[in-house]
Image (tube, protein in one colour):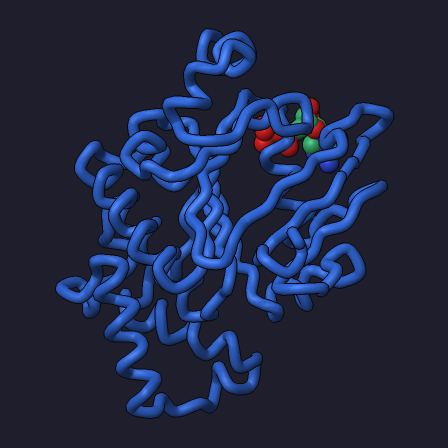
Length: 248
Ligand code: ADP
């Protein structure tokens, strides 16, 4: 049931590093079109979980199902990206000396392979998609600006746009609002909710105001497994969450 109704299903995933259990029989389900927030103390296993999903790390035991019966633990990183999983790391990486438009165009072409990047000519449909992505990530008015001239928060949005150009079914986003202004942080909550209308998004964040703004189901990890899961009010009132995370 969990396999067929979910886009992503981690089933009892464990992984140890030098005898230390970074993930301890972790189970986690994301529905198609769901936006999910992940919280938890440092060392809880949040990064390791993303590494397992994207194939950077192999679990010792357990299975990761994606988009039906596909077992991601049997795929390598490149195949998993191709299947439709995009990952946004915490620090923005954009081509600073290229324009905002060119950054999205390069990302779109990258989906077609190395040679396409050099020789591909954009179709009218490609151009329309780039315009649409620019609109989604609040970059339309800045499309001719150099990426290097953007604020930190705008670079984060541009990189999210670059990931959208790859058309992932699942987008993993690591601490997007760290270093953003308050205005950028609230705008990011709106932006991610818009993006989740057409795909699933999993966002790891420590900013509780932002998590509250998102208003979606929250999973709190600790010591490699799920400590609590539910609405932010439910999770933030859980004594175990207060003891292990919020109260620290
Ligand atoms: P979080 O992202 O929630 O802060 P991590 O997934 O980064 O947690 O880390 C979980 C635990 O696993 C930490 O104690 C960390 O030191 C350990 N760990 C993660 N990756 C490795 C690795 N490649 N080698 C050894 N230990 C690791």
